[in-house]
Image (tube, rainbow, N blue to C red; front, side, top):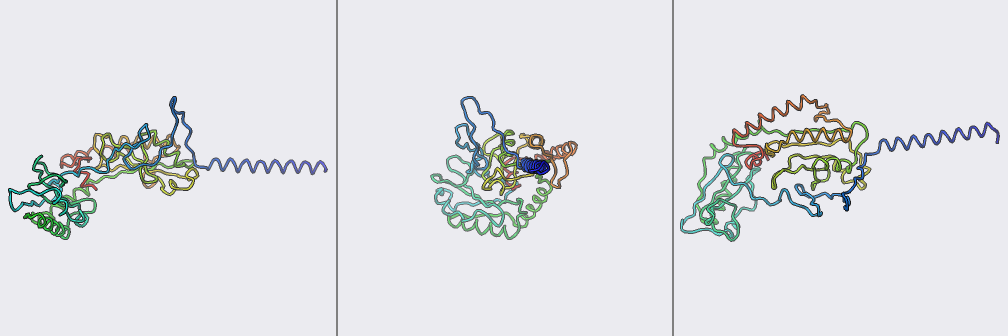
Length: 349
């Protein structure tokens, strides 16, 4: 083999090696970023956190601790957001058992798109409650919600409420008394107008500047900020400080990427932070924590915080949003619908 041939062979090998190296470098650069192995506590080990129900938190022992119990006592009816009909038993000397009241309940607890409910006055505690086995009730009341995010109570829904209440009253030998329909429908429209004008749901998006992210990478960094996995793939929540309350913030990303056969190879380029203002108590400082979480994730994951249109959010814009929220909190409190209260959570649902 001549010197020329040898030289060409060497040059060709170098070019091939360079191409292979560049391909490997490019592939590595474009691959989704993976979580780093953290040092476990002394005597312990790091275990991956499995997805759990929204509101569950994995305890140190590995078992779920329910933070948002699935079964909660429904908030009592309130004339502020409910139409309430009274049901008087035919004989004041008699009481109805909880079992009989439950058997007389309608199959569905809605009138159209509005929650429908029945409460009884417990003869022992003298408190209104949803009928329970083993208890007795001296009177009842039925209610339908005036408004929710589906809109205001209308005449058809009011009529369905009347029909269901009459059926229950007949079953327990009671006489119902209803408010005037037109008055209640007008009240529902006014409440709905107020709710629509004061329903704030905020969203931030954190977008990758360079390399994409794997689900594990997102879980690791959001977990450091207090987020825990929810039941829905691609969803994490920041729990409230008290049990039984909705999460303060919700973080979400592509659910298909989270459910992929090999999630480590899923390339995610954005995650969203969501705050449902009316559902979270003011004392949680939800917007401050939302802002801190967004900026913290953007810094840790090499991203940028934007609005829904992809425009970067400047500090002064966030400050303006925070000021507007303080005014909103004040308005809701003046209307006796403080953010995070049982009534506000029902109205804004």
